[in-house]
Length: 246
Image (cartoon, rainbow, N blue to C red):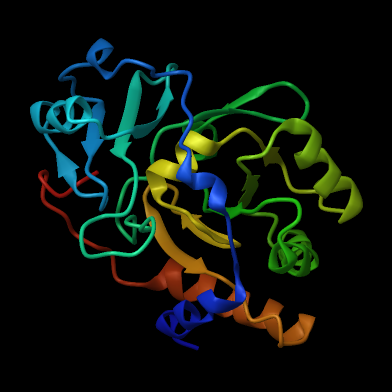
């Protein structure tokens, strides 16, 4: 199955209205960052902005979301809301883009960073506890992880630790879970659930899939997931110029 076909399944996925109110307590003032090599600014469509242009939109009343990794000294900020010409929040990161920096809490109270997953392929699942397709997808993800011990796996939710743990317990979901990830989710532009992203060993996105076909049986969904990930791993590398690299 071609990856493009999967995008047609968006209608079967859950959409969260919580993204209408982006929250970010870590970076309440972008002027604290200014112009630095490891700080990147994006417009509402996910396109790169320079610092001056970003601040102009903020001063004009635009809100923004942000994610950062203090350990790496890196941050990414994105103007929130629908981009001109688009309905809703747009997933603007694709194959070849650097995955945004993050530092998010685990259910055990530790903090994980993007660099913790470098060196191996990492499958990331974005979900929330009451999302029906996310619930249906959980057994498939567990089965896939058990068959692919050479990869990293992590689930990320905007919900708090209580709801994240409830999902893990009720669904027998044994992936590592990072919670309170609203800033990262908004910067990426994830608004449809579930969303899967494969991060390469170099920290770049190797592939992304939005939604899932709930009409398929579990064995078919697992086979499709395996096929998609193998396609992503073996796809021709995307070359970018310095100005295009996020």
